Length: 190
Image 1 (cartoon, one colour):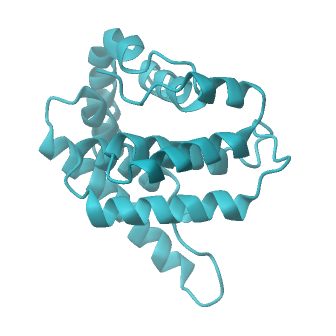
Image 2 (spheres, helix red, strand yellow):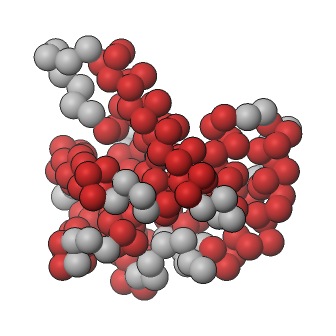
């Protein structure tokens, strides 16, 4: 089973550097079927990818606003936390993303203690990832990502080795987020 919805147009937009058009496409698609967890996860993952790669040079920010993308991320994650708290795919992907870069998921201003928020969001992400694996212990992606955040390198590498033959089936597309997961889950760490 695919881990992300198939969007041929999305891949084309990304390759053309039209990241705002990609965000709009996914946002409109999600709003059209707001309770669809797969569409929500696809939107969240696109926003997370854009924001996490913002300063690396991989994302052209022409016509793109960091604040608009982050606000979309805030809105979609809040909706998911409120309405999809038992959806294992939402919990797995979003929890992983939150635990990796918690600072992308809260307002960073002088009215908030960002050190506390960072720790709270990091823990929330880890808890979501663990819950995803508890809900669906047969999900090899959730298992590997959960082990990567919680247990030593050996068990994490074992889980990734077991997952490797399925990666092309789970992430068959060539969108940025699918390539990202094929890379991180397909690489055994030393």
